[in-house]
Length: 252
Image (cartoon, rainbow, N blue to C red; front, top):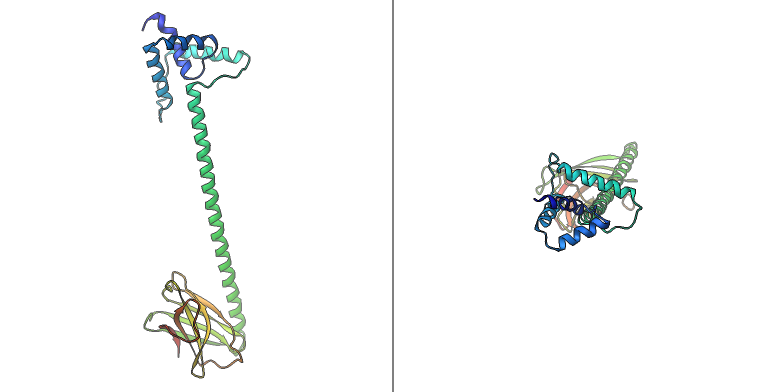
């Protein structure tokens, strides 16, 4: 490196950072246009340093370059502000800022969607909890009536470990609680039957959760007849007027 070229090394560092303006900018760009390989190499090194994903903070520029840069920045602050074109370094910074803004927007949209999803889940959980509390209150009201019966339903061959309890009152209806049932296939549901005079009468449809638990509020039968037996079969989701599917639960 020749002493006469040393000022251009300092100008190259400032030019790469976008901190060069005025006569120095005109002078350096004219020098660069003449095909100075040393300046092109210096610019390439500076620009490469700007785009490195990780920077070794222990490496510092030569004192003369740092001193020249600081003097130039001090002179720039003392001058009257005026619009300046973005140098390569600032263009890179602007690109990073735009990319960061886009990333922040995507992240914000993702977080918002997650919160909305969670709010929907919480609303469904709250609705299920309210339904459970309502059924418990209805069960307590039924149990206070001496006419209420508690009927046990045992599991049959399709699911022998299944079981159920029916809290039943001829006048007010009842509540069925079942457990150990397999989840109903797509398009299917469990249907409860009340057997009166040897004839099964549809008494409601219900489903079960992933653990095989389900419950149903059962309306009183018209005329308040005495029910001899309750049973549960697997039927089409819309229900059927008479049993057609396998029987999973039945009382004695």
